[in-house]
Image (cartoon, rainbow, N blue to C red; front, top):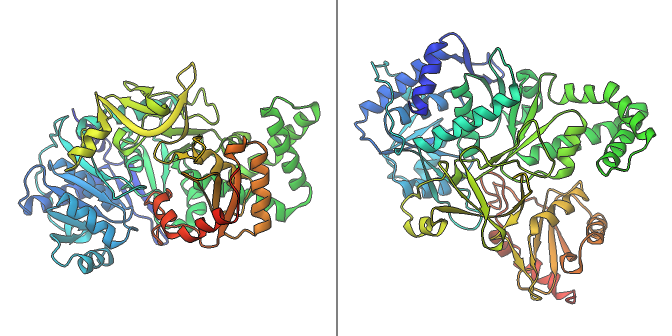
Length: 548
């Protein structure tokens, strides 16, 4: 049975169980197994009416919704290849990806998205709204029959250093991954007797987010979809999840929000919280005292439970975090509150996942062991290379790029890492981001950037530059003063060898964002583009300092 067979069988076996919910101001829509199968059947009948052939591409462009899920499953069930696209990307970027994959049909969640595509691409292939697709009378659709080697999706990478590439994933890739994720969640949930309750706010078009969706359907979980990011905090409490997927940026914001709120509140609660935080850090450094134990005991009985309840609710068993490394301090902070943070590492090319934290053995700063059936080792320059049934077969229509990424059966991730004696992995940086100073020193900028942000709470982003130069410099964004920036740089430099020290900085008031084109769709820095746009500012940093 393919993963689709398993999902359809799960829905059919529990026709009255609610699998999907949307949180909206009006009556929240929900879909039980019977209702979701009916929507899928309508979408399949519509697709059949379009006379497409197996292997044709169908672009899926819309915000998270039950309808998005139904159409996604319908496309794959008809033997077509779904190309999920990010609704917040510019029409020009979306059209470039669609022209690359050549869809026969474009499915749009609303008229605004459709019209944006048509303005950029007047001769676009057939465009249809979700609503139109789901008003068709459902037919007597056969069960999905998808071969393991059959491509089921093309997911475009974020393109941090160039144009996005279409990653082809097969039914076999997806099936293996769903088995692995379900096994790890079984460990987390132990002896469950009811549906897992899962909250979700990340765009379903991203590989890791899509795998979480399919895992929930595969397991028969109840997935609650946030539809308004401005109501995220409220929606998490309404959903009362057992776990949910996150990106580091959100967890950092949650941590800072608690600090700011308690600082404003003041009084005894703030005193206990501050003392307990300091005590927790000393415990991690194995330098705690009896007084520290007293402060922590007090906070655990009075302060921390209230923070957990207000922040996330009382049912949470773990937060899951991926897309980028999470700072050790933030992971330890949530552990202090009694909330495990399980890290996941992977790329779109690895069907989103290579490693996952084992809930029974979480080590802050590491991303867990390789999942079942996956081999990982280090290649040249400490690069992580991977092979196994999760590895993609090719980039769409990019033979040369495929050959560069897949060599001798191993996928070259471009990430630097290290593993301990137990096989627990840690990420160090990106090969392509590696800075080589004029002195010959090789430096991964990400750990330094993390330290800068840790010491500068008001900053939005930090970008370290200096390739081919005599020293490192930093670009800092957000509402910070030069004095605050200098203090943060001084603090970071104290723990760095001379060649890793920041010798100059520039404060750029406007944060890098998706809207101004300086962040990828999943929030990663477009380093080359930032360097090009801020070339004059970078040159000034090197004009006023002497190399060390």
